[in-house]
Image (cartoon, rainbow, N blue to C red):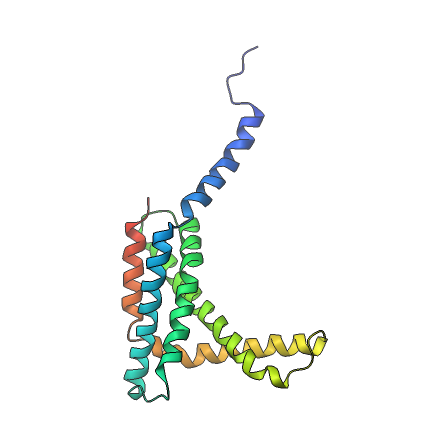
Length: 179
């Protein structure tokens, strides 16, 4: 009796190795993470500063903390966002690259909004209940949700000057680095 096909153990092991290989292929290199985070953070913070400048002549008290918030938000979002885009969008085609770029920008905004929510929470912590109470958890959840909502509503207009440039930069970079 001859066995023409692969054994059951080989067929089970192949998808697992494929999944592990896909995960390892999706991990960006340390240089990509380092330089990409710095460039993405700088581009993102310059975009928001340009938006504020066009909107009201940069008539804010101190633009440095705002630029720092956007820089750190974008820098923190770069590596996990790039990993997720590399993991789920592997083809070198315009439509998946555009979807990956849009999701990457949304992920960057979400991480930056999360940092804003942490700062917002620190400010309102003085008026919140003590830590291990149900009231505290409700206050944490709703304060964070309000912060993310406020951040999203007040900053979406400010992205407009540089958002097409950021979209184009990541789109072409993503197309270039695909298989």
